[in-house]
Image (cartoon, rainbow, N blue to C red; front, top):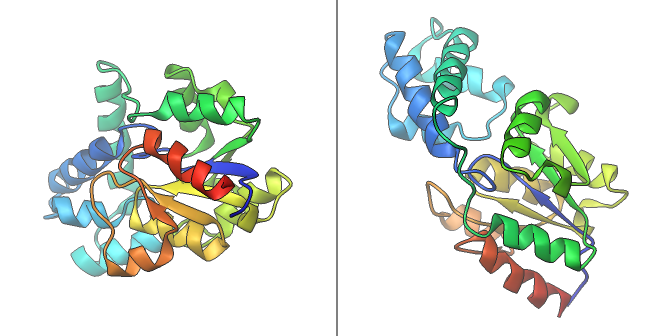
Length: 220
């Protein structure tokens, strides 16, 4: 059916079980500042670049919503938590990366998280050296859900997006990868794909371990 020349991974909620923490601490930080953010509000901004998140959140809570200050508090809460708790890998992460290595298929990360934290997180779980390229939203003009980060990540691998499989857990990530032209596999974390997302994805897998089967189907 085709050849997979590279696999591009999202990080939070896909490789690492951190999305639940980001949602939790967004809510806590916003509530501390006096804004009634809910779990559902925080879910909607997963992987959403700040240029889109700021007007979205101010549309919900008013122009007094200080994104930079509240995000800074969210990061502080996250750092406090992770200083006392291990980072958890998502099911099948190591197995999938080992499979790709055995098949000599390059792997990259395309994440909304900044490079310093991405490097720190991946080194903490022993995965940093498993990736050929690390691409962060700060490296492109527009972050997710725009396609820039996947177009750039594919280019860094010397490929077109259409030659790459993208792995995403969130709606904004799926929209980004799909718009870039990647063959997108959704591995749901905190929410399942709706009808709109199902039209955008090549397949849905319940775990990264299951992605191996999908890749083998593509390789056919």
